[in-house]
Image (cartoon, rainbow, N blue to C red; front, side):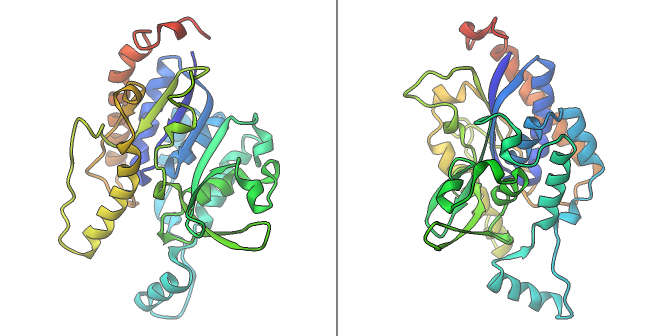
Length: 307
């Protein structure tokens, strides 16, 4: 069955998305359009490039996540340099490795720019904190004087993954030369289900959401904040969940696989192989349980026999 998919952000927690994707593939689901924020944009782009969940697992298992922490070489003592980078660069890490890694994976499938995929088949969400607005890529690129068909998808993913204070933001300039800082899409919409599913219209095909949190009406979690590090973590956990969850009602929830990964931080780049496998399996199990009824046609009988 052909469907549209939406993938939430969640940093390293997104390994559970791979497990959930595998469950969807096992059920015969194939994606026509995909959308994502932050780590979800990585998933969406790789799916559009033709990567399967199994191939994604192989890629991740052979990846040294610490390489994503690409910092500028300097003779200045590290603690002091970190403060300088936060002040002048607005982030600790460049993000170049992430973009180059993504570009290589896409190029291996013959994809570089948005012109290399069907129009409208991939939507990536970022945040323009200078203008205080959400940015949908490639749709909004023309506002910055950029041609969508020439814009690298890897660059769009890099923009969507620019976690504030962690990675350097990306600078864009609008048609009159005003500078904008583009950061992680999770600042404004970590789970952009609204891109494909709207209450004022009937979707052309089923829309399935992959959300790395719980349904807010089912479970209420609290953050234990006792120091600055815990405050930082709680800040971003809240940023990535509260806004979108506020607008998920019972109608929307029937099309969302909720995967509340609470024991892993979004920036935990030192996971063991065992921990990675636990995240894969958690996502698979949650998705398989959900899809037993969703795919059977009980949710959408009108789509049951569609190819």
